[in-house]
Image 1 (tube, helix red, strand yellow):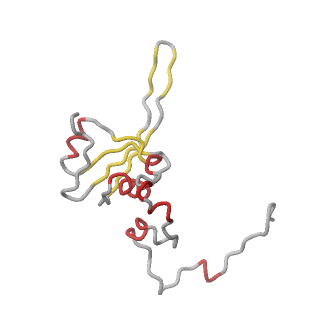
Image 2: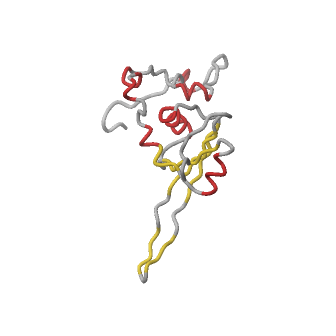
Length: 144
């Protein structure tokens, strides 16, 4: 029973993938070819360099461990809780011009804090460790 429109039915041919079709590779997902969408003129304009990467990448995480990992071409960012690996890789490409080799994600739970009788909890957040190719450097930790 459909409340707001017609009930959608799925064809039997669409439900099962064909044996002759190739699977979607990760490179196609990074390029956006798997969805079949073409790149709009808005993203090709040089003024829209950063696109919507500011919504995915919250800030770079500057810690002692992160500076040690930077020598191994691994950079740590605080990212949006809703972002996935592909969105993060696209945001790094848009913001810094480098395509990451690997993106690892970690959910970090907020610490329990108390101030006198009042106790609470800090917000949960998500951490991304981005691995770049050898020789590609993001100058985040300069002068720290």
